[in-house]
Length: 295
Image (cartoon, rainbow, N blue to C red; front, side, top):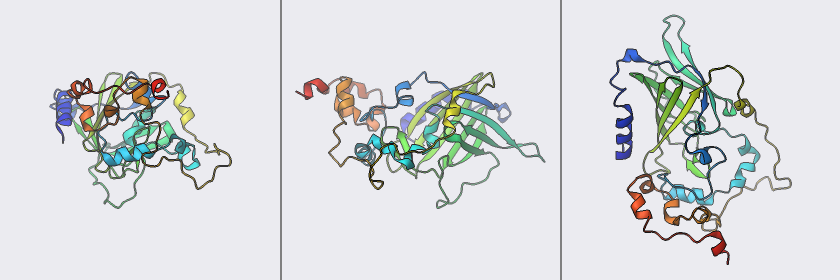
């Protein structure tokens, strides 16, 4: 585990991990996503070419550079669910309940029903092992959990390919995710540590906060429960997949130009995650504005 991950987890969980196992905290309830951080990325979506703060390697960067947003218009992609390392980041409402063994009255699993694309996720607490490597992969993956004081630690494997950021940065099917769920009153925090040996050079650490829904009225998330694929681009060859050839994507510097940033940090990489990188950024030339570059 890399230094950023170790330091972050140590600072956040030092006060709670020493609690006895009996201090388990109930996570049950209806939880609504809170967008007080990273709202542009999590709501309308990140800008093309914005790889800042993502520890992508060369393979991940090349994949993202070749990605075309029109790919989302393909019928097979319109209703494609988000994978569990990403789904909590978007518009979301989560119902958390417990599975209880009728004989022993022990909690054997925690169930998450996620309103986005009506996904159901089971977090097993009964000590069962993860399936063999060649077992089927799913959008939610296979998750096992263990209470550490009042913090629930969850490990997820067997994920389908998805994305780390919704502008083409890919997540491979070899990804594993470790999560920590902890509750403070009506606030629930999920800390995720995503390790992807194919497209990331270091773990990707994120925190996401949700608020307890105190009433039981249906929320706007229900509009996401059902999805009907349609022909969004009539007459297009059904075999065509929108893409950019390597080196031919004209939009990769737009993000830097529009926000008066150097191009280099927008290309991402592990170095862009660390505070000390800011000093280096200040020495880099600013990308020309779109108006200047068009002259």
